[in-house]
Image (cartoon, rainbow, N blue to C red; front, side, top):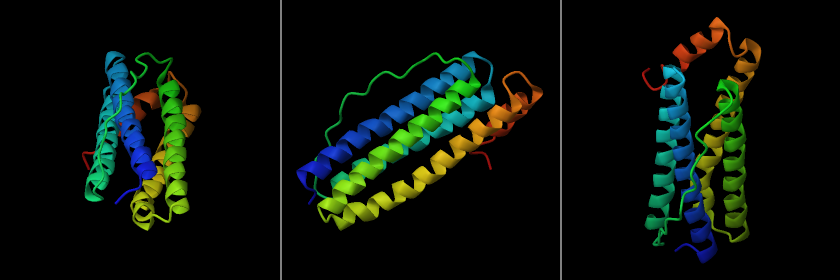
Length: 164
């Protein structure tokens, strides 16, 4: 059985994961509206991954005999300055999610909740990958700039995500 504090923390994390999904879907809509179909595909895939993360937390609470209580999700931004701005926000957002998951892990350690610590290890590893991917794209965008042919190539490459 989950403690009340762990259950509440994971319920809040479910909200954050759903928000992440919503945020990336909003970014996909922005890219579609600005004729970046490959970047939109990348964001749609990312949105789906975040939704799966929320479900994973949801199932964990259920498996441990807890009660899932869904919280309200804030509206994400819908306008962005540029492609670079979007991915910089992705990187910052993923760093925030990492901190939230680390906080739950610290709570699980404090409460000697070994099952939650084990479950969270998957998310901790996933966040390393999420931050790495976002950071790589931000670095590439810094090098290629906003108006070069390389940006079209990046759009095409990122549009292949999930098709391999």
